[in-house]
Image (cartoon, rainbow, N blue to C red; front, side):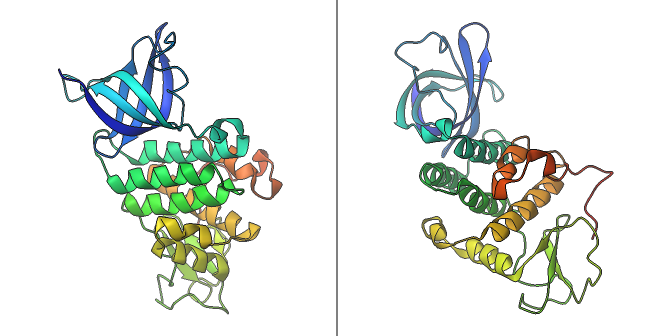
Length: 272
């Protein structure tokens, strides 16, 4: 079968045997695919310093014979290394969380150019952003939208009143919607409470193009609220924990990982 090429961003790498590597990419024309790089562990030319998490590559490959087989990776050219994402621990945690979300929310061989553009933007922004948690939170919000799970942050789900001062708001992870303090006066559950400032930032972020997202400025409180709300919503959608969450969340306001909310299970689902 003839050699083909595409661009792709490395989401995950694992060893395979003594000399090979399994590499999962996200590509604009192929979606999420996994390929095998024969001899990659010992390669001194074809793959050296290229097959690394978060790297943006131009990939040469042969497609699998069957619909569920592995792509055969022949060679790769490095387009962007994103080196700081592997040398700065905060940026690494943010990039790992984003890649884990992409792995969980996508199916194999189901391309979405919007998701590829989002991933490319986010990793580039993480390379330079002083607050990686802000970038990954904005990327998380847009990823949910791209996957078809757009939460509603601009009005109360019950009374349909637009978010405004004078109310507090509870975010319901099981529905991705809000309840204002008038419709839910007893906010005693473990569902996240969001300030009006945080809600307006999130609602604006949903409307902004990627190249305008850097204009949004979060306080530590707003960033903390937004991260928790999106994470709880994601746990309800996936019904499983995202492993890199604790590390990422611990960097906001200096929280210790032991203080991060427990993963949602049947026994501790947030209450409406």
